Image 1: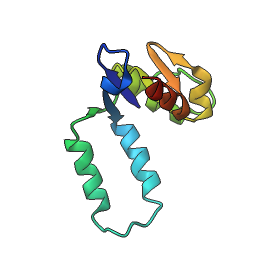
Image 2: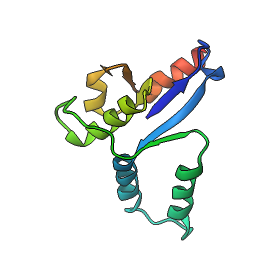
Image 3: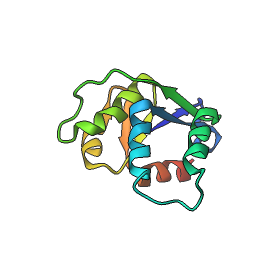
Length: 120
């Protein structure tokens, strides 16, 4: 989830902000919980980064609607993006990519975001 702020057409000069919500963080921690990490304090440090990160916007429980079909679990990403006025959702998820744009939020694959950044 990405919010890009700034009027400049050059993405290098714009501010990138990670947008997250409670449902998104829950999914991240559920997935990461399947792995073993060398440092015991990994999750504490990660939570601290999300709480104190300068380029992170958080919304508790954004309003969800049935914007897409096929994978209801993806709706949390759209809800977060719309609620926090993101410009892009960067994802390779097939269900999200099919939607292409919901409201003012464009859904693009990482390769496209890389291309936009490189093009400046």
